Amino acid sequence: MVAIHKDHKELTDEQFAGLKEKCLKARETSYSPYSKFRVGCALITTTGETFTGTNVENASYGAGICAERCAITKAVSDGFSKFLVLAICGDTEDTISPCGICRQFIREFAPKLPIFMFNKDGSKFIKVYLQDLLPLSFGPESLGN
Image (cartoon, rainbow, N blue to C red):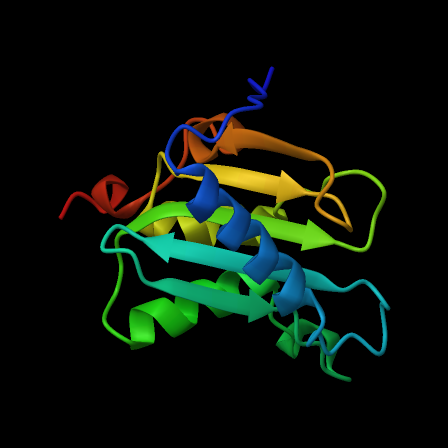
């Protein structure tokens, strides 16, 4: 069973509000003409930089990218690979969770990352930790290197 938290102890109130705002704003730029399911993501690095991402679909469905992987890819391509928190939101009344491939992608960089999941207007959120969403996960250390 996944432990659900209602705190944001990793962030100040101001940081938490900023994270939520950036996450909700990122969703507005979604390119989702096929699913009509918009998702936004905001990611804060351990050094305080914030990166956002949105889902970008493609007519060749498998070529699309989720908001979480978009934000992480932007951060890593700018030289940041240590993350403090990640937040996602969709257009739903309830909170949303990262898909399986995003869980594995996040795991590569932050196996214990707190993930804030917001609903469509940010009025509801829950926090979970990646290791609860992806227990017994496969990561870089699994390769024996």
